[in-house]
Length: 497
Ligand SMILES: C[S@@+](CC[C@H](N)C(=O)[O-])C[C@H]1O[C@@H](n2cnc3c(N)ncnc32)[C@H](O)[C@@H]1O
Image (cartoon, rainbow, N blue to C red; front, side):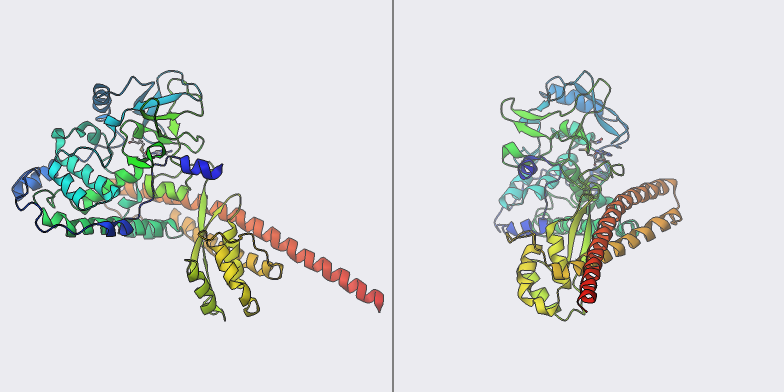
């Protein structure tokens, strides 16, 4: 059931591996359009630069600027009457608020397919879309380019009201500089995930530029299609794109539905409803007029929510929260080479991260710990340990080697404690952290990022504290059990003397 609901769950963040998908590009046909139709926003470089500057790239998220124009355009374009409206809200700046009583289990929204943006949507510049299609550009970079292209057409694009209401700076970690990531997320594994994501986006953009944009400068002028605008469009996709399970997992931007904010207390998710032929969700709680209506963005940890959506739920409110614990083989291990070999066989490496939750940790983590501490005499079991440590293998996971259980638990405890001290160091230093900025705007930004990092670190450390407590108790029980056994044994010895 858990697996089924995970598959059915619509998430606003589908997995994205551009460096894999990008290899599916076909090389550009040499004879493609010798005289491409000039349908970029303008023709001369100077004029293009001016137009690029004029593109508003959305609006300030903390204002309701453009929200009423969006509502009006949606209604005129076929959105049926709604029981909700876009308003300023306490959680998530803008959100959908109930105008009437909403019952538990009621279906809401009904956004028709004509209002979705998908890889099949019509381009204002049809020529640009054709070039991307001919080159087999995958959905994510395709939609990112589409959004930039449509934004550059201002009012001439069908989506201008939608684009004008998008946030000018989506709150994702894509907007953090490398220095900010290193400084504020030094204790968290999310820092590494954010670096990888930025690298992926930059790599995707560079690949598109090399293979396509540079060959069709009239269709994709650099003033408009550059790394800054790609960060914006990917930021929009990471925080708003929906995967629709009932449409075979098709990804779409769904105006109006993407004004819903996330709550960890609800399980309601967006999907296409074949009977009403629109995107809907069924509420799992009732709402009174004036209350903000929420959906779930999926079973995500606080770190994953920060990574894609740029917020951290309040401490202790996310039952799906987890922290990545990095485990490593010791280089001084006599069997380092053999262990690494079996790990590689199952797609693992000398350092692996496993998610710890407040309720416990995965069996794979324990299997990795067994492997890391096992002595040369257990080399015959290395293979089964590595297989169990991999989530790709179907091997039996709940291994138990009582002879090394204490060492394995101690190994996990030591790793947890090493992580806890990193968080302690960051959280202590954050109080007096020098924000070295010159402008009030920059100061606000730094304070905001620092607060997010403090919230994330506090919630991740909380999970590690819980694991530390459980591990210490288990070790105490093992050790006191051994002590008891030793006392009984000594008693017997005395008796027989
Ligand atoms: C799908 S959009 C929702 C609409 C968005 N609030 C807006 O005004 O455009 C996702 C973004 O909403 C904000 N958000 C959603 N849920 C939130 C929450 N529980 N707390 C804080 N911000 C939230 C984040 O900025 C996130 O990137």
